[in-house]
Image (cartoon, one colour):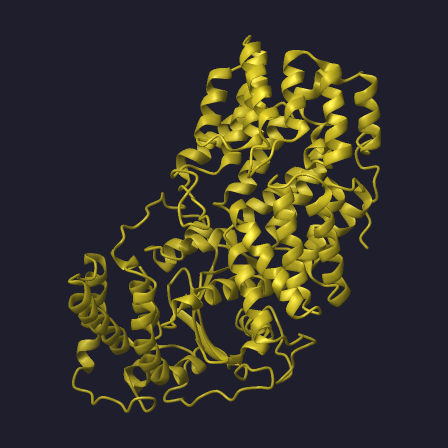
Length: 636
């Protein structure tokens, strides 16, 4: 898959001879070293490219590193609208460490081809082998997205390819991908697909057109990262989804200390090409701070871990961000990443209690002290104030600020929508969830958020139907964990099945509810599933089974996802033991500062506690009794 991706890049850039050269050298290495051949799909692809190179077979070989090659011939230049025939020459680096801004269309792309055709051909051989024999793996197939018109404002950044021979540099491409997406998402007029939806295409065999249709975007951005010593070379390609034509490309050279400034410059150049931005002054970094190499490397390692969107990666992400802030206490983006990692730990229930929430708040406030315009840090503070400190006005202020700074921030929209849902503001919540689905049309989280809202609103059949349709048509997205294995056994992530189990339980369909829990949590490690399982046993006339679940909760803290008193309270509600349930809920709020207590206003399974003096007092203390919309909605 990686080899075909690079062949496609060179083909679209016009350097078909370079594509053939890359293929032949890698194929020779595979046969000599591994007694393997490239896959049949790759062989067919290179045959198509080779057929289009034949008319130029008699052309003399250009000098390595310069001169006119197949990608710069007048015949090919004439076939590419918007290119400047014969234009060539390396870019001049600006003070930020990046290349001077590109001209419109493909003029700059043609300047690079003579250099790229050779540099990429040589460096890619090592990179492709370092990345493993992914080209020999079977493709993942999905249903087509249909013939709906593509969103011209939609942009997706596919994972950058590491073409360094050093495998330890793989993190660099992943971290830079996440950082570039973050930079682009802040541009007005663009809908940028979040990294959680694009990272799964790292080893995909799908074409640019197929990926663009799946994500509903008109533009795909790809590229390569090649570290060498204290510098990094980034090559970025922009392709139109509909035609699969290369629209623009550029190469940027930067030191590690200036890599974030270059990421901003790339975003600005992309905006210019898409006609949604203005060219910055040459050499302008617009206040982007520089940081030492060690701090930047730790930061990018943290971004790479966080982008995997799995609870078992938030701990490693936290550790990398923490080291980055220790190396450079003024590193605003690292403080923001640290805040996001602590929030991930708290929201996943990996560590109950006030500790991670307090740490998240301190880190986010530190980030904003250095850069007030970091949407991630504002989203973290919105989450902290909504789930742990129960300050709805502050929560809404930060959520809206985050979305105002980054309208493509799907996570912030889902968190804000959940906040609105828990306060009874259903229509506003649904609008946020559906906007998140527009940003990530194939992603799990927006679908699950909408299904959970339907369930909480009593529209149980609609919730079940939405979840089942999604599970039947969407591809399995299995996140990685540190040892490279999967905790999901090829299944959809936990929350889809948990929401499905909640909905079936509300209907009294306890068999399908338990089956959904088994599908979503086959290892039995999720405290949420354990609590609901105990509740189902109690409600279905099996109190002894329910008490066995409670005993299991008391014997173990269920590492790595500990049980909260909230989970125990749910089982006691099922058993009809309301006083004990309220005691446990009070403990969950006071001792653990559990993120789950904000559900008490809207979760129908706690309806039997309505009217209980202790329960009503708890709702008042949590600020969950005010009428919908009573909190401030003003922008800061």
